[in-house]
Image (cartoon, rainbow, N blue to C red; front, side):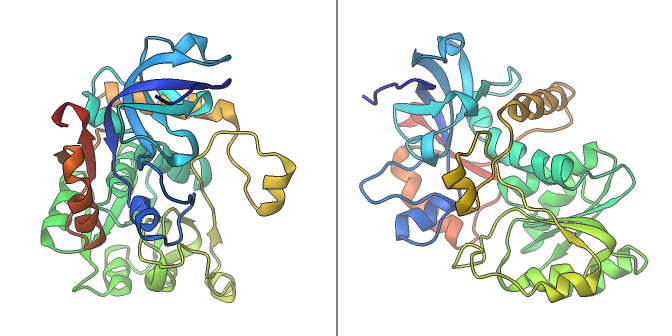
Length: 322
């Protein structure tokens, strides 16, 4: 049983999400947060708080969604989460949907609204549109009154993106991204691009940016170095667009972390983002896309399917199936 420390809560987990980053952790590759084995996977969960440390008293007994401490430990009966990453679970969502809600929608809100400042009538390009974060970004773009273009692999994933409200779904396995975007936008390009994939296709995405556009690197699923290899900044200058970094974290970083390059979002921003998202859930404007509901014994096979791009939306471990 994990111990509860000050500033944290313990959650009796009912459901836990699978993240693409779990693959790198399993294989010893580059991930945002690394650890040495043995460790338990699971970044974000839904459950009921059963114990609290100092500062977490108000959460005791409440049904919550949470981001686990150091992004580990969620796929278990009990998990620890810092109070800065704990929020009330939306009443309209069941536990599996709620577990799939926090990380994709908080990340997408930060990318689309806090960083890129997407406006109604603008064009939003979502690269990796069938991923959990991508499906969230599409829905937030549509809810904001933007024209959404999604990039995904294959007809089935493209159909999912259109069902969520994308005006155009581009198949990156068959279509020329630049040509399709320019044809759809009258050669203007996109105002905002949220990129969940990164890697070799990044500079092609950059060519689709409108003058003064905003590119937001969200994920690096197609980059074996997890985005740490860098890209030539001259092409940003040549394209006259800006790059807006985003990271899902609500915390205060000590100077040692700032020197390392980590500068998280203010703690109070989390409640603001969650409140805005819950209003959209209540209005029926957004909902997590659940690709698979699985038991703990299916995690390894599902991670393999994620690595081979055979999944859409969020895969979630339902602890009641264990």
